[in-house]
Image (cartoon, rainbow over the protein chains, first blue to last red):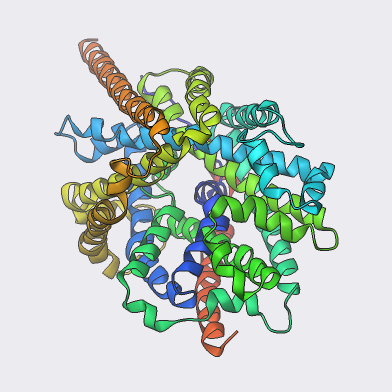
Length: 514
Length: 38
């Protein structure tokens, strides 16, 4: 007998949930650094082009594929990909990447998210102000992470406590389901984080009303840089990572849509909400604030100091020097926490949905199983942060599998499922007609772009990481252990897929007999 | 900020705001909880 699957409650709810998944720490920490390092205003030209050629087509591909798979009762990539290529039994194992990727990201993302919660707390208690006054913000962060013992932290107690709180919050939201948990939280959290972002943007721009030099650093174009392939690649990469495409999360979220829901409109709305948070809010905060505060001579070093340094050291440092600095610091970290939690709850759903739909178990049981598994899996990133575990997880989950997954997905939809079928499927229930040019972009341009990015990144940027170049000798066992763990996890998920499909086959046989 | 900077900012912000406005106007005008019950 067919089971009643969960569904989204409202159209705005699903758009905010997908946008919440896409709006994460990267919008506020990664985007401005990428723009500042790659030509400022001129970076935005390839960025917009990549948004039109990769980002939006990939959004529509994922929404369409997810809803199509959902109509067969699947809510995770193995089943969804199988529904697109029915006579290929191996495709469901490739679909395991759509569960493995989010799981790997979840293993370290929740811990980073817990730092933002900790910083909210320490902004409110005044500890952050004290650290800032004594120029100790870098030590404060290292102390919290357990990398050094200092006057602020003498061990991992605080970090682990905030990790547990964040983990429990995530599991609780997931426990209440698509409509009662994820949708409700995103309907509050996303507008709230946008409101906080607007308040912070106004505060930062008010530091420089007369000349807008800070904004100028990010937006003044240097058109000569457009000749560099590096900028085009950086822009394509940023668009790609910011929209959460290729991970498997949008596939899962859109599997809970109804056949009559407007996929082109919903996909475009989620993408545009993410762009609002990234370009308008993300582009007006860190880099402009750092430019105004530290001046043009230091800004390049600051932009190169890394996203964590900018988010957890530079920004509170700036806010603490302003009137009501603790309040703005608190709002900054609360905004990051909300951006983080709306993303992490989306990372949980592919595995929870897989347990629910492929093993026919209740959501509550599926969430307990997920919580038990991920609580154990999160520990290496918490305890071996200094040994490169988090960086390696980020490379595989947050970079490699995303690009690989998206490349497989676009080829599968545009070439194997068929572009005409995709086009017709996408427009079912839609009041909006997508311009026909996007059909050809999806079939030819997006796959070529993605294959190009994958090959170029492996050759240029990733080979050193894959071969562990630059990893300290004492960290090699940890990095190797992380990679072995990822392989074992992949094998374990493949075994689960095999069991689920055998069970499904037996069930179908029994139903036919009866 | 230079004229080029302002031009880029207005173009990109305008692009994002127009698309967001268009989408949310359509979504909010057509949203109805009552027809989306399980």
